[in-house]
Length: 280
Image (cartoon, one colour):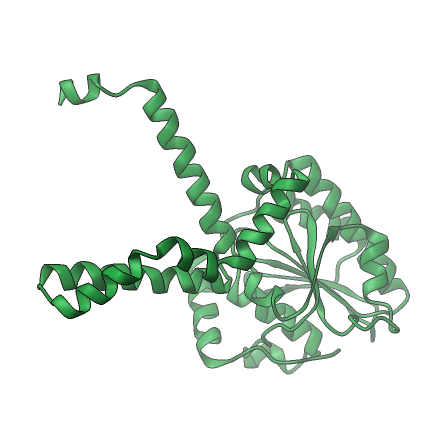
């Protein structure tokens, strides 16, 4: 054991840490997308290949050997959109930002922009729903909307929810410090004790908070009230100061991890329902 530890150089440790960090960030980026499902499928094929060789199933092993001999082509074909997007980010200098994440100052600025936009929309009785990603991926919902990949600003957020905008009926998804997509469809909450008293926009905010650890901010066009959905609960009403303070706790400072009960609630809701279209 001592000989083994003596042979490990600091470069080896650094190399292992860097590779682990890159793999982790890639898995986080793939989570919640079709790419994650394809990775799971490739993992199943890899397990089947090992079992076939172990049990000497020659025909199946030959077929899988032929498949893995073309693994480079397979990966390029399967993950073409993800590879193209990663190369585009590399060219624009955004890949490093995606790997290291956003700073607290950037998230605090994001909170200010969202708070300004929601307060302005609520004051004019314009409905809005903004979902902010935390640790769980929202790509599966972003794929149902219109991709934007734009800087999150109060002016842009307000313009997306104007009644004449073609995207005003859907939700805006924020990943990191950028607007990932708009006009997105979300699952409605199936919690019967509270959902009946809420509009569809509020039920969508509650539904996404039940299935993920995301934070959803809602401006009601009927009452002009602002509420926040997190961990399967609705917090309302909120003024601008309270909204900014709560978002700073949940987004800029990380916030508490979602309870285990919220995970099982979201899992049951996901099995029982599918995304629906909605409007407030």
